[in-house]
Length: 270
Image (cartoon, rainbow, N blue to C red; front, side):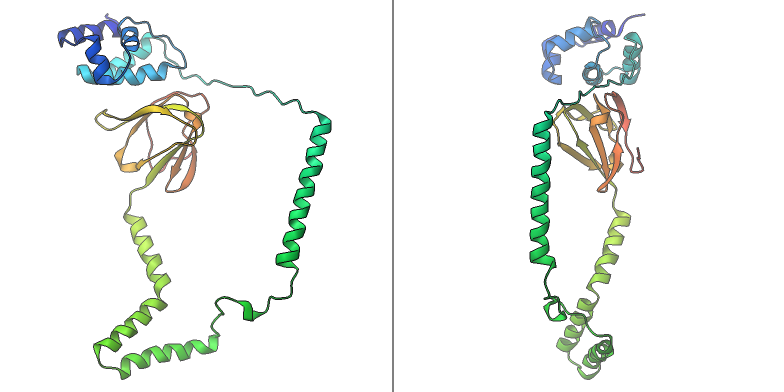
């Protein structure tokens, strides 16, 4: 049975493509193309990069992408590995650390004392200082009666428009909240991926076209609609935080975990 490299090389030669042609079309280096064709790829943390390029290569050569990728994984004994990183405890000088504590507590005490003196410990809290005084309950029937009198005593369109403006103003919060609920019910969910650290990242659509393929930096974000059903391939799933409709749902996987062709939906939780 031919290896993945042999299959791809034969197909490239059938289509009269040179290695330079492949590099230009896929925007990858000749070193990666040669490694794939010569079966020199090893199972390493950088393997996710090669899998992403292999998918693009198969699409260009019009091969069965999923079959080739699965054969490639079996060929190199692909496994999802979790890489752990031990962080050593800093060695702090006890004297300096003690001074920093005393200084920090002193600053906090000063800020709290100042805040209390200027904002809390004062007697000017009478009702006359309220920016928008509350309307007494006894006045509500009078206001409602006044609104009714406007429409009953005035017959021209101008006065009716004024009455509608008053009603609209009085019910602004109700109308706004109703409209928001309607919009919310019909809108698709928005998925935002926030990167907690540098991570290689690739997204493809339903036809395996690459939407984005790059090394994302710390605090970068990528947003798309959930109905697009994008496939996600990434080198470190533990560095990707999933936010759906501004609600944090958790990380897409464990730290150091490699994910391939993972599809998120709006019900994702982790």
